[in-house]
Length: 71
Image 1 (cartoon, one colour):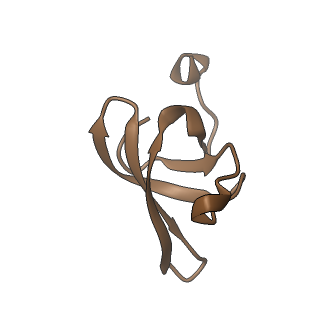
Image 2: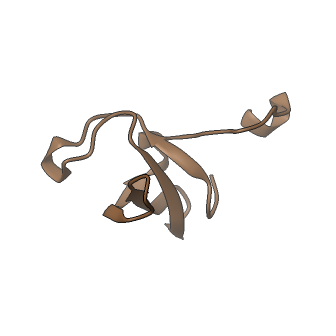
């Protein structure tokens, strides 16, 4: 995972009102595996910015990828 990757949340986080499948963008990496993720609506307005661990996220790809990219 790296800066500006589009990611999806893997688990519900009801205490911060975020749920599995919501899509965000990595906007900062604080340390290896710890990211600030911005969640925005379809108009580009941020509705949440949270610090999350890599195991809580799935990188989304919008084009064909090589197997080595996801390994």
